[in-house]
Structures are given as structure tokens and as C-alpha cells.
Length: 116
Length: 112
Image (cartoon, helix red, strand yellow):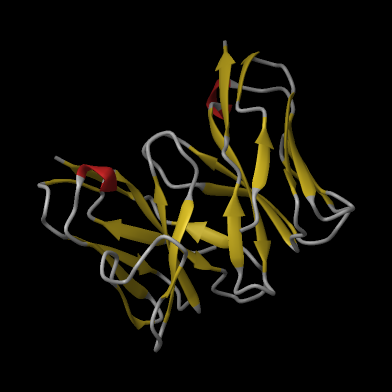
């Protein structure tokens, strides 16, 4: 498996501001993913971040609102832009198996975002 | 997109009882995964299934990949208080950019 860390672990932000969430993994991985988990809900994929190319966004999510960077094989960032209270969620990054052997995703601890 | 139906939504059981939860889909997946999420944490992988019909155990947990590739179940035997949490199934399709879909979760409460 992979050891994944996220920063910050939680934040309280004002409406209209932006927050950048960092995801660091201890092994080189091909694919990194960003999910949103609204209170009491399941996980919804925001986008897939591949190194060296633009992120691929799921329906309902756009780059202007959730810009993503993937500068190397162990790091990615997700920015939540121009935040509103509806953006209050847990944001999770995940990675595929660093060994590349299995179709599995491992998750970071999440970033709990509250927008006032 | 592909939807997963996970049931039950919640369970309240006595310590020592067995638990069963399942997921069904209208589409085929080539990998089924079961995760557990504790409050304030990210999901932790419990069991991964890669072949139709596969039955895999991890301690008191047993999961099966349905023959039709459209369903999976997770059983927990002899539950203990630390089993409390939310259990999510997930189906992954590696032929569709590793697209992974999650069930809505089963919230498990274990009464001592």
C-alpha cells in the first residue's frame, strides 16, 4: 500500500476565498485522484490527476472551480476556488497501487473544509 | 454513470453478532473493493476482489465478487465494538480510465 498525507487536515474559510490542498505520497504512483465527500454522503470523484497532462474532470466539476496540479509522481494539489458554504466537505486524495499490480486505490486522511 | 446500490443503509447489532452487507450494480466491474471509514479519517481498504466468483477473507471479514460481476457482499463475523464505522463498497473499471464508483455506505453500530 501507499502512505498518503494531506495538508491541511482541516480549515475554516471565508466565502469567496480559495484554499489549496496538498497531497503527498511516499511512493511514485501513476494516477492520483481527488474526491469530495459531503457531510453524511459517499465519495464523489472530482478529477483524475496524471503527471505531465491536464487533469480529467468528472461531470459537474470544472477546472476553473477546482484547478489541479500534478508536478511529479508523488505530489498533487487541489484548489477550491471562490468558495461558498456549499463547498463545505471532506476532500480526499487517493492513489493507485504504486506497484502497479492491482486495480486498487488508497486514500489519504482527508481535508475537512468548512466555508462560512 | 454507473451506479452502485449498497444495502442496508445502517445496521444496529449486538456485539458478537454476524453482519452482512452487499452492493449491486447495473454495470459490470472488474474489481470490487470494500473500505471502512472511521469518523474524521479517510477510507481504509479492507478487501479487494479481482475475479468473478472470488471469495476472500481478512480476519473476521469475508467478501465475495459475484459471478455476474455486478455484485459483491461483505460479511463480518463475531462483531466487536471497534467494527463501528461506515463501510463502503466500490467498483472499478480499468477499461474506463480506472473509473471507480462508490456505494452510499452502510453505517454499522455495535452495541456492547
